[in-house]
Image (cartoon, rainbow, N blue to C red; front, side):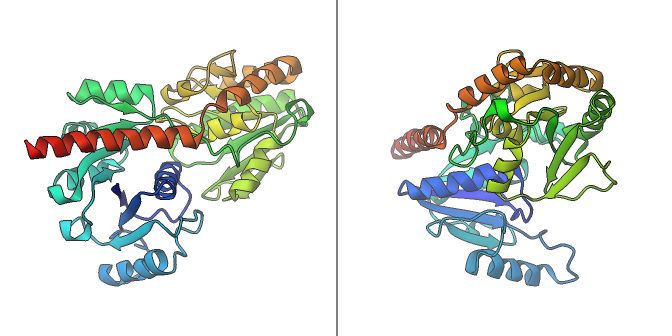
Length: 365
């Protein structure tokens, strides 16, 4: 097949949603498909005092030609990258399938001519931070075939539209994220945490829980990582790692006994799943996306969104009951073994092929 991913901007810093898109592009190319990634990047490098055309031209050199960007992800050389400044149809190749990958790209993809292929919409979250909820809902009703990463998103899309949503839950790169330090040998009072300034990530709640935990366990050590640096001074019992490479992130997870997540809402929650695959006990809020892979007291400890005390109570319970931590973390690592990229790509590929064949049949009729 000839497959095009339409991406709103080249993510210069690591973003979980873009990571999933780029992995699909790489793996579909490896499977023998012709894959294009079209970056519509008129607003990238906005901080440079240059005309839009020059900024886009510079990006084209850094992405299409030299592939310096995105520096945090390595595209397969077989993936064709094209950086453009707008959604004009002339910027898109002939294809069998074209995939919108964000709310901003849904309307433009819906308006592309038939030569660009059957139209799909990869939905990884309810993107109300990019536009009003009603406008996001409208993107579900454009006639694009929706592919969603979680059950709650499938229910939402089908409720807001008449479209049937295909579920391809996010996989984990188990070649990278796996247990390398035995779960029972982790340092007792160590916690991993993602730094993210977006309020919906619940960092205020997470810090509240950690302050409570530190009062109870003075030797607590928290290993924080993120794509952006903290805008506040962290206490001395926290250390920060800026944009760790995948292997470094795997080692960070493996050095922790618990991974803490206080998210308010999110489509899936990639770092929580990665941490579980690496043997951390996930202590998390029970936001909708986490239920794709975490079950309270089966492989994780979950509590109500916004409740710092409940998170702290779960941290205390896990620290005081190592047998429980080891049991839940071991089950979590085992459960995450089912989330292999090969399975997800085969399912994704089948959806594209079957929908495209049906589209072509309707065109003949």
